[in-house]
Length: 418
Image 1 (spheres, rainbow, N blue to C red):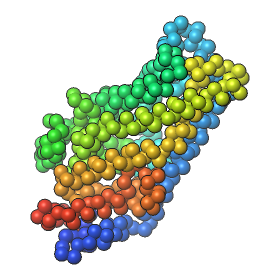
Image 2: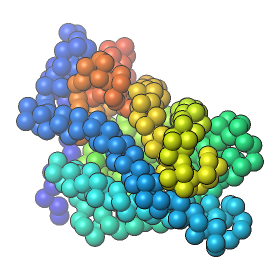
Image 3: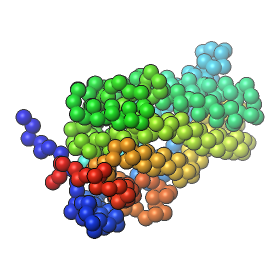
Image 4: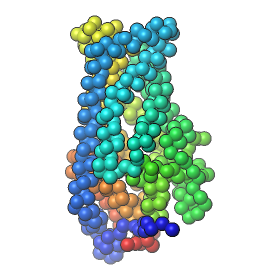
């Protein structure tokens, strides 16, 4: 028998339904439940993520410069030209080599951000072997899929010339949809074991939510993500035959049924609202702006440095590091845009989930459970620019407003309370 206490829902006294119920006071009560020391640590962890994005971009640019300046990129292209005369195959081999070089050169940084820092803040359960196993698996999958994608983009450049930006944007959107399609069945199971959730109240409740939302699901899966992280997570991903409703074991074993229902209703909302289509579409448009910047800036750098780098032009794969550097900087600058795309979808899924699960206390309590790695109460400007999800305070306030708008009979107090 496990010594771990059963999870209990978080319900501060000020949030209990009554004639004097006040949304702001209820929200403040939830936020106040976080100990000061934990809040300082959580804020530091989350705010550090802002700088990680900037540093990652800078390191990517430096690696690109190194590969160009040392002519390693040009030498790799020359090698592929000796291997085959087929342009697509040459580009595929080049892309695989370049992605491998990038991955090895950036590994120390990835190790710091993905392993050392995660352990420093108590977010990771992974050991060295587990980290490098997942890293190697990601590398292998990335080499195959990424090389095909890069070879396809260069094929577009060769075929349509100056119109490549439009066609590359369309192809990028299609590629993102393809990845959404194959990920639940072919990629995610490479990193975790998936099992059907045993029959019982939790499974039945999740399937009932899916049925209520018009989502065709006959099964629910759980996966063993606790061996990697302490975060809770769930998703409803894929299309048609690849669609899966999944939750990780941290959520399954560490949350109450109202919290699980709230989290799963949110994820079902993403699927029912077709976010699997709209989010890739929005990101493809952002990538299109990046491609446009590459088209405009590549020749400027090529005129000044192309001969020294051994790069022949935009259609030469040897110029890929330069294209990656430009694209990385543009996407960093577009972070507020891409964050807004995702955050808008999250707001919609929150509203959808509350309406079908009718679990305002479960929703608010679940928002508190992730407060150890997401800043709970940012400024409005900070949330609008730097958050790709609603903040914890925003989510709790939404739940309390929903509660205030519905009679107690429809939003009864949860049975599991501290």
